[in-house]
Amino acid sequence: MNGDNDVNRSTTHTGPFFADPALVAFGDSFYLYPTTDGNENWDSDNFRVLGSRDLREWTDLGEVLRLGRDVPWADRNAWAPAAAYRNGLYYFYFTANDNIGVAVATSPTGPFIDSGGPIVARGQFAGRAIDPAVFVDDDGTSYLIWGNTVAHVARLAEDMVSIDPESVTAWEHPAFREAAHIHRRGDIYYLTWSENDTRDPAYRVRWATGESPFGPWIERGVLLEQSPADGIFATGHHSILRVPGTDEWLIAYHRFAVPDGDGFHREIVIDELVHLPSGDLSPVRTSADSIRLTQPALPETLDT
Ligand code: FUB
Image (cartoon, rainbow, N blue to C red; front, side, top):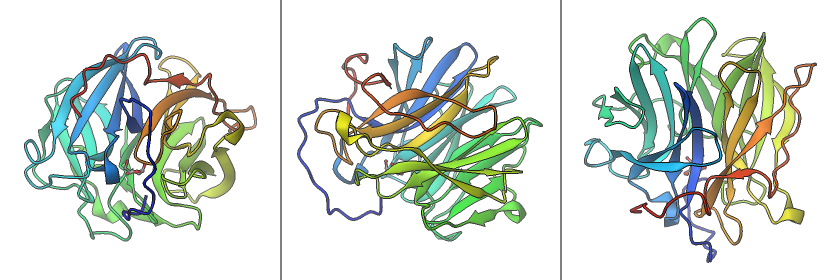
């Protein structure tokens, strides 16, 4: 997305609509922290969490944070959260008015208490301060990743609510738009991100590999893209999760809701992510068989 409003297609999809999924496993449950979608210009002011035991049946577990009320320093554009666990506490990173905030709770379903101000403020670094992701390395060191047009990686401090300013590392690439994410398998670090605008059917995910969370990154190509033959468009903003205790990996991402969605009416789906013996990622094929979080699994309990 870029903030202007040049696309305004009607929709017949009944929702609920969610986008920008942060899929995580806490204990023996899966949680998904999304953007609440369905509003023109992504004009949501609250975040919800969905929960599942099996990744197929999802329950809306309610609101976890409301801008303006729980976050006094920002009141709009509640976008693209991320979540992490450390030392008995849950940390919720979120976009608000082009700042990145963090809130803390003793449960994955909240209530989350805002830390008091942005962890990354609007204008503090090049590009837009949106789309946080968290990567926890094998040695326990945690990193915050964010950005639009310029990606940034920073080491999170022990308190998880501040970054080491000396560690902030920028990465630019002509095909980088937003939604950077890092995961690691063995010795290979993977950087994945969205290319193009979220309202563009060609919104898609690209990947790169590196030797550390700070790169250097070698661009490897397209990981996930639209399938016009299936009526599926704009497959982007994703997160990647290793199923705990296994070598099975999942990619959660959004696409235009099927049918008739657009860049403000998106749905979240989950597919398998395959690492080949070479370490390469196998292209992800979006389809009607992708696990869908919306229609009809969710009860109609949303108040958006
Ligand atoms: O959902 C609002 C914005 O759209 C996100 O911040 C971007 O990544 C794009 O998905």
